[in-house]
Length: 225
Image (cartoon, rainbow, N blue to C red):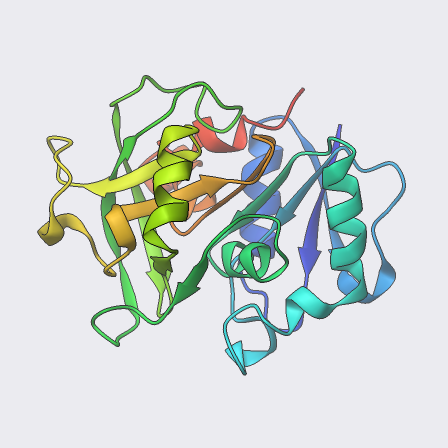
């Protein structure tokens, strides 16, 4: 299958995503946003970076690129879509997923490894893990704090649409283990359908064994073979 990795001006994790996907046996290709979505695409990655320099809000301008209308249409027809970091911001700004990502509680850019607890292992993006399993992935963001109304968040919790929460090494969700102040320590959510998801940590940076960790392989394995 072919997975399109969408490039916007300012994307900088696009090639990382391609390399990680190819290491898992997928056929991945870079797609410049002005060229439109290829007809034969079987999956879409919205990669990390700083699309349009994060002007206005992170992801806000990329979300208005015409290709995102095509991505939304493809998603509505069942095409898997994964937004990572800046791609998660683009996904929320495009209404692919609920909520929004805003400035870290620290008001600083943070680049570090974090622990995540798998909240729902019954989705394409988490089926390689066990519920409650702790994985370690890197983060690199300045606007990673997930915000949503309490009422809507309760609905997402009830519907099993929370993929990961920030936690400590033992899997305990604590304020101290939350790197950006995300509400309820949320690190990733699905859209109305579970084949559409966004997450702030970077699975593609923890996929190649040469990089020291492979905890992110399970997320990218969510694309069907």
